[in-house]
Image (cartoon, rainbow, N blue to C red):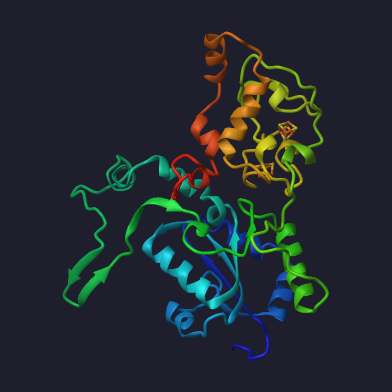
Length: 328
Ligand code: SF4
Ligand code: SF4
């Protein structure tokens, strides 16, 4: 039952894996604070609510909407516009909404290539070669499917966004901090950060949070973690030849991966001031390569597995390359 006095909360899941929803549920007992402070009016993964219920709400009647997922089709975009209209504060929540994330890697492929991989590959039983149709006549009437867009867009490429919470998914302790902040704002004990701010994360890089030692050593080859017999637990992974994106990635996770001998793959998105995350990683890589001869440099770079995927795993849709928006 909705409450006429409590501020309203909504959460929506567009093109994403659902991990952001799990991360919110993973905040433990703090979820009870959310329930106590807010009237949850729309959250399809947690409650039954229809789009028409949102359409019937007054504009600006939802105080806070967390929108996760990128914009891959017309339904995603219609919901982005609808929730923008109904919400006072719209948060681009998680890597998919903020920078495209893994679904955004499909921007390397055309629509036909994506459909071929999905409906025509050997792992799909589809002898008649059926493809999705946006309109289909059945005896009961006309069925409609949302139009699939040629490129995935980030949320702020289609509507204005008030705040960003990065992460794939955002760390639960960071979500809890943001909820505390919103509760303090509601109580008049704090003020909202400036519009457009990244919240629930740091302003520096994962390298700054990482306890590993950096000796500015040069490397002569890249290796994958399973190729090393013993990873030095104290030395920077990049200096051991393991591609680590920590230098281009926003801090906030506590350098979680390098602390467990795994490289940072960049899930907190570009650090403050980084325009193109892949270009920044490339620059860092170039600075540690110990070679001057072009052929030698090329041979070292050949050791990087899937360079495009490694450099743009999370940020392709928001990069200067293959983005769903114009570069300039
Ligand atoms: S490159 Fe990776 S391992 Fe090295 S300091 Fe940065 S985060 Fe740590
Ligand atoms: S270390 Fe990197 S990949 Fe791992 S959680 Fe932190 S930002 Fe994400």
